[in-house]
Image (cartoon, rainbow, N blue to C red; front, side, top):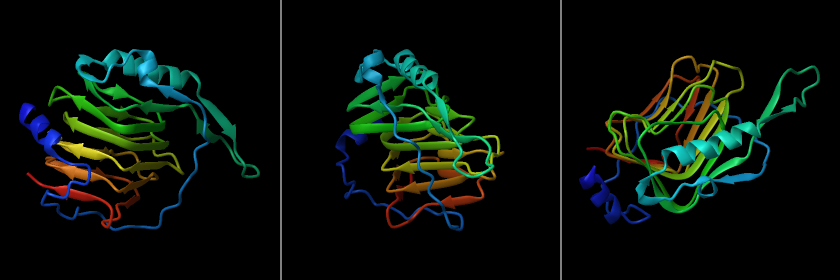
Length: 223
């Protein structure tokens, strides 16, 4: 991990010096974009996260996630005779910093966003970074993930209309897979755009019906 961090410190924002390769992806199908209602923001710093590359921020981040989940609401469906609705909860925001974690962070859904240079670093190569078993409508953007086993370990209960978007993220040194959209997610649509994958064991595993990774924006560098 120390060697990976050293290399990470040497990588500029545009990653131009890396020998970047095109990601091999599954066939791209049409993808509909589902908007998530914009709500309040929850800043992980307000719940005690330091982002100082020293403190274990696991508990503080979990507290912020729990606060977002307590504010969960389900808007009424706009489709006549429709059932359910669109989930809404505050955005979880990571300001610039290096947030060390020692256990996986479970996030039910919603928007998770990094501002500036926000890194989420898993100290243990046998543990995941972010997990979700009910990622029905979820957006993850602007974060850098470092280390760990599976960096995004996502799935849902095969609900129709599931949509996951991952954008403008960087993934470094996953011991297993950077992004996993697990089994039982067949009716989910996954879109990955403008992301960079560096030295994962594997960049992507997806069991969704529709997986969209525009190769013009997303890049990968192998080990």
